[in-house]
Image 1 (cartoon, rainbow, N blue to C red):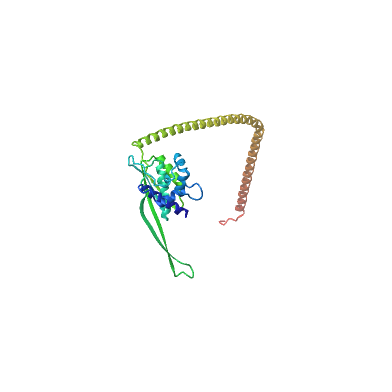
Image 2: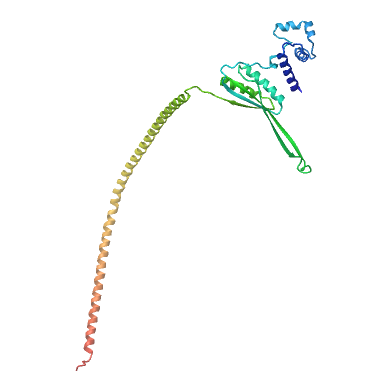
Length: 308
């Protein structure tokens, strides 16, 4: 209810401003009387004039017979170059909410010296949804639901990107419930932007290359120092091992010489025993052969002579 009263007041104030030749509007008089009243009960302009409060407020810069600037239609700044920078799209299911937020948007743009257009009416989108009334008893009956989306668009010209960003941020913070907002922005750069960007990239590349070379040099020096330390440690360990090996070899030679002579004697004695054993075997074989020959001769002598 309060929202509708505010919208009615905005419309009434706009109508009054557009009709300056007709100041005696009963609706506007009631509106200004309710605003100008200092107590809970509104007072008529005659009471104000009789009390003398009109002159005092007029001296302070307040006119109770004119509507506040926030309730009038927002004026527009002229375009300087005619370059579009953004388009603001607004969506809502309630046209009253949409008109109220558009009024707020235009006043915010005027306060920031932004040349903007009036709200353009876009085609209304209507969607029809048919669903069943219930899953059980009323499943054969259907019900229709209609979804209506009202659309408006506001175009912005000749505005600095920083000012445009502040305006959008301000609208996002004070966004009215039930209203959707979408912004389309166009950003422009100066001529020669590509060359400037390439020069910056080349400078960054050279800087990174120098840092990489310094890092690689430090890594190489560290690796060389580690290798040098390892090689020195290995050389010192090798010299220590060689000294200990020479001492152990001298002690081993002195301790192993008597067993070597004993082993040579053992080998000589084993060689003699083998030769003696082989000589015995040969003599035994010779004896066996001589005995066989002698027995063969005796057999031949004992056989009778058939020729005789």
